[in-house]
Image (cartoon, rainbow, N blue to C red; front, side, top):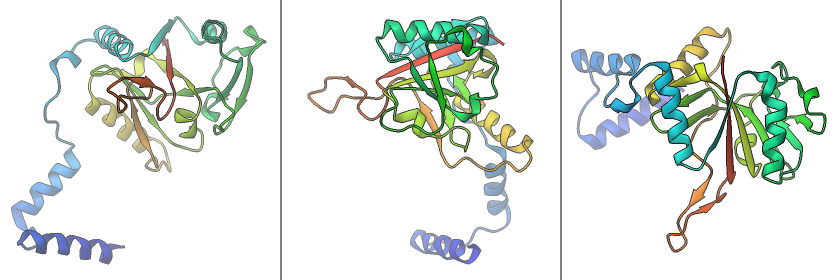
Length: 228
């Protein structure tokens, strides 16, 4: 692997007309790779946690998300059942296996049918956690794992996301810092195969510049924002 990598880099250096970096230049590149230096961060992402939460909700709703603010996980079953009724959606939910250990009292909404696993075409509603909410643009950071299959983020027509207020950060750089910390603190953790940044429901304007939702994924993105 190392030899193949060096061969590729040698080809790039040859096409650029320069040799291998050495000395101060090599040290500068290594420091930048390790330091995750920030460049330009929008001022609007600054502020205390209350400001970030408010900005996240504002930005998410501006891109056609719906946001339901909850006092605790106790409210999830009934509020989710209400949402499904309002949208005339089936009461069948495919959730991420990661949520199986979450203390959600599903017995409060006995009409809901909850199963866990990766999504299939027949799944109309997916329920997943999120790694972070990014206030800067109202974006969700979602990553893949055995407990959080990526199919649940894109296959169901309706994607419901559980997000805690403490998971909301100001800028993209903060979310990446959180992910690096998470991977570093968990014994045996590996880099996720996929990290998705999702801003609102799937959409396209390719046909006559008319926005169509659900073009390449969910047409609804409903965020259940829970206080810690």
